[in-house]
Length: 334
Image (cartoon, rainbow, N blue to C red; front, side, top):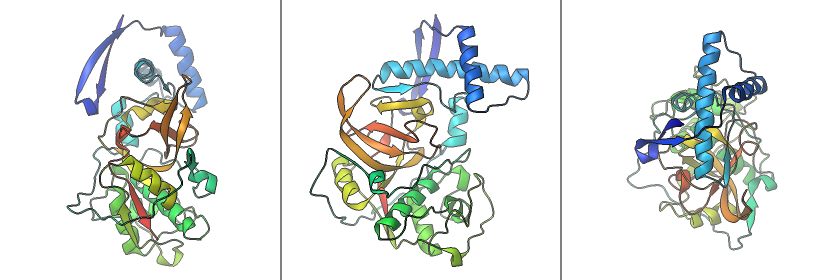
């Protein structure tokens, strides 16, 4: 019998669960070696190997618990499996989400779709760039803003650009944004407006670290004039109709349990302590889950590479503010 202490930040506490583990040492070693080979993991000495193997084993046990409580999703071995939850949070999330505090949130009346299909995804309209990989840098906020700007520039009848999140990471200073240590999408938009636009990724390559700002205004290929909240009342129906009419929506979420997400739809155990920013590209009213049941989901683009989740995406059940999807939906305006 094994006791696993499971700490979920949105519950504000830890709780112990006793269960009989099927993870024998031989099985764990085989899984760990397969994991290391698949993701090109190299451990410098036997001590480090053993330490990471033990973390891997603990994470397998946590994944089993997530699968029990989230039967419509699948949790298991991801490329983050040799990191403790604390290490994962430090390296890939925003330790302290720097959410913009507006006494009066900027809100514009965006067009609303009149026809609501059963499913919709801006990827089908060629309005979304391929999935990026932020690496070990808490720059998701810069990626989320960049991806939303790319799509809006395309929807304003321009070629779809691959823009430079590194420009925002390096140059957005003095507004509370802190590069790899985190930031927020509204202040990222405000930086892009003040800078006069964004360079392409080819001119300002991503390095996954904080570098000296080297922005060149002569290289700008896309601009925005303003930004807006899509909903100020956490209304997911409002988000859906404006997603269809206005384009992919930047959102910030609670991604604590995403460390072990493999596929399917998240339906529980996901709070609203925002620590990660992503892009909402679509939805499905008739998604058939792993149990053969139909549920309504959001389709969300992540920035952890295409070798994570559903080819870089994640499905989250709609209309429950799961993972905080409705807490901070924004759109840049070209």
